[in-house]
Length: 235
Image (cartoon, rainbow, N blue to C red; front, side, top):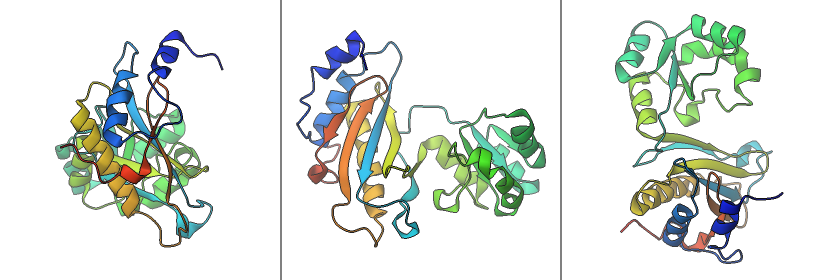
């Protein structure tokens, strides 16, 4: 695959075989973000688990202390007082059967996260084939199936992200924007990594963190030294 000139210039800043300390990696990933837009900084975390086994699943959610830098559009599926609670908390869209029908009938996806009350999951669950592959199906582990609708919406708006394994046992998540200050990006990264480490399944054997890579949207990957993760801080 032929890479653009900016990518090639960014790649020259990185030693491919080197494992960078987290603070070095964060400083470097900011330098490699050379696009004209504010690139998202992402973490790609390969784990020593087998996601085909239920007891080795790694999934959860964490609030990044400095947010993601992206405006998250929240759809809430709820009725009555819980719908009012969602609106008061700043949800972008609120509804029940009408919203479910809109997704199903109009192929409508102008939202980033769905939060639902447990009593609506029976109807929403029918859209599993549509929402599942897009990673949009609400889940109690991620805090998106809950009666505490107001708090859930506020946390998501403040920078709560969900992490989960893909089929190749890798977690892909944003940790901020290239415009973030280094210490804020590092704080977000450390918060994410601590959550993933705590989520280690008891059934996981051997090395848990296989590889951790930071990358800007249009930039090359930077390998992070797993041994230093969790021990570094923003200070």
